[in-house]
Amino acid sequence: MRRIRNDQARRYALGAQGFIDGRAEGRIDVRHFRRVVDQVGLIQLDSVNVFSRAHYMPFFSRIGPYDRDALDEWLWKSREMFEYWGHEASLIPTAHHRLLRWRMAQALKWNRLRELEENHPEYIESVYRQVDERGPLRTNDLDAPGERDAQAMWGWSNGKVALEALFLKGLVTTAERPNFMRLYDLTERVIPKEHLNSPTPGHDEALAELLMLAAESLGVGTAEDLADYYRIRMPAARPVIRRLAESGDLEEVEVEGWDKPGYLHPDVALPRWARGTALLSPFDSLIWFRDRVERLWDFHYRIEIYVPEEKRVHGYYVLPFLYEGDLAARVDLKTDRRTNSLQVKGAFGEPGIETRNVGRALRKELDLVAGWLDLDDVVVDRNGDLFEFL
Image (cartoon, rainbow, N blue to C red):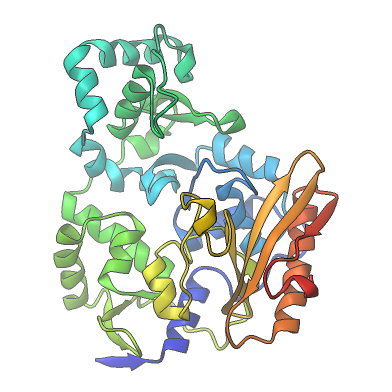
């Protein structure tokens, strides 16, 4: 079994994720958006908007400032992407619709859905008919959508539960997201026929393709890393990964410092150096599997949105800062729309960094992201060991 050093594993990861070539120069267009999606495979969505919508950031991190309206136009109008449960709620190439039909067919249920089916057995079918007749629709456009439980984190109304159940089954999908609000329509009116009518692979065949896509986007990873990318359960993923390694589709390698084998995609090249510098969304695919982040960079990272304020270590919405291929710092950011400024609530360097160099590079990145978000100023609080360099 071939052995690779941990610094090589980092370079594999950064190269596969698009952090080697540097940001785009000149006019940015759809070709750049496609290249990012080709590299990362899918883009995670998230509703938190304290700094920036999560799905905008992976593009900025890799290609630099771009027109967000142009990205939205491509994401929602070109039909090259569709929304489904990939790595959580995600934007996924429409060509990969066929690879997730096994998940749609499972029709998993949760307690709130079971309760709705028991108490209102014909309700979900009536919601489907409304989308068929009047779609695309928001939840509030439904007849009798029901009341939301404002006291519960996921206190969905009956209408929202029904639409999400239909979404999970693949019967409806997102037509568009104005102001990030999902408009539901029949899947056959959104997904182009060439993709909707493409042959459905068998379950294990679909898993194998998804795991190979994950390996290509990760560069190198453990079985758990590969399975997490598309949220495939390990009991299903493990035998498929074993077969891919036995057939030579994946190369099993030993990685310095890892206590489990790594799997290397044969088409992923080892870059000569790692020089990527970028702010990273907490939902960026480079860092979304926290155990892998710790293995590769010795960087312990947890998002603290749901941690009580008095127990937070670094802040509410903290973004890691990638500096010349290393996770060198983290910064707590908030977009203050009242003052139209980027608020730096805290900036913290990792042990052993060159504080001045990292701080100056971080300030340059903060200025860049503030300009991209059309903000007038960057306001830095005196919190953390990097603030004096910002």
